[in-house]
Amino acid sequence: MNQSIKNSGDGQFSKVMPVWKFCTLCIFTVGLYQIPWAHKQWKMFKSRETLNISAWFRALFLPFYLYSLAQKSFAIAEEQGYRNKPSPFQINLTYWILILLGIFTNFWLLISILLTTIPLLTVLIAMNYYWEQQQPNLPIQESFTGREVAWIIVGVILWLLIVIDLLV
Image (cartoon, rainbow, N blue to C red; front, side):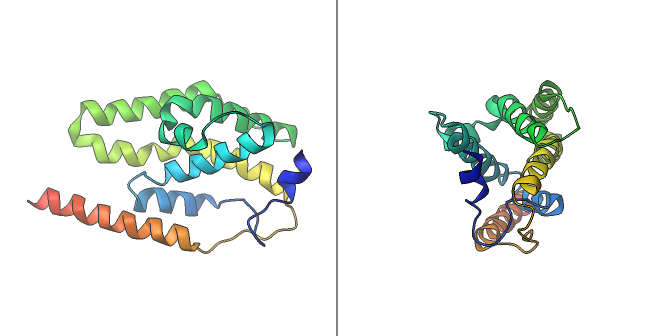
């Protein structure tokens, strides 16, 4: 089963996502990039473990499924020798606190949405470790893909709407 994952790379590049790239996409898209990123993670787990789940549903409702995503991510990274032991509970709790902070204090809404990227970094780093072990000979794509550029364009439009709303 791991062999099919190992050879199912998107073309010639590793599935490792640089942290700077993930953060940039989350900032540019006002946090919306977390959804396609989570979808990609759930899609991999669905294939790897033959789960009967909807990857898009779990991505859209990421706050409710972040705990299990973190658990699964850390487990497969640990199988490959990952030594960090982050707590899925703490990651999920931090994510929820940031969401609730934004909901209950309108002033902090935008900031808290952007800060939700931080707890996801531990999951991203674990997944990157996994993919580095699975695809050691594939180069990491440092430039943005066409889809990522499209997300950035959507994000720039969102930011313009936010700025216009703040000015009016």
